[in-house]
Length: 54
Image 1 (tube, rainbow, N blue to C red):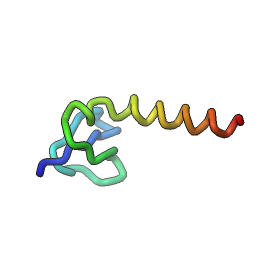
Image 2 (cartoon, rainbow, N blue to C red):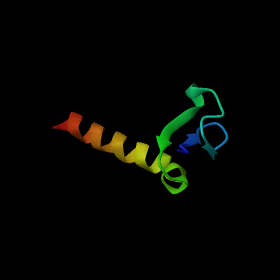
Image 3 (cartoon, rainbow, N blue to C red):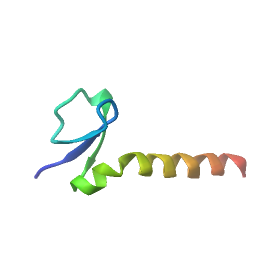
């Protein structure tokens, strides 16, 4: 099964982990999910920070 990873240095999606794990976010089941990795990270960070304010 192919996994997709978002590379935070190149800002590209990789099929299977080609780069060092410290540069990757994932794995994701689809290329589209990986393409939106940074949006998902931002949403999770925002939710976490909002939880700190309570």
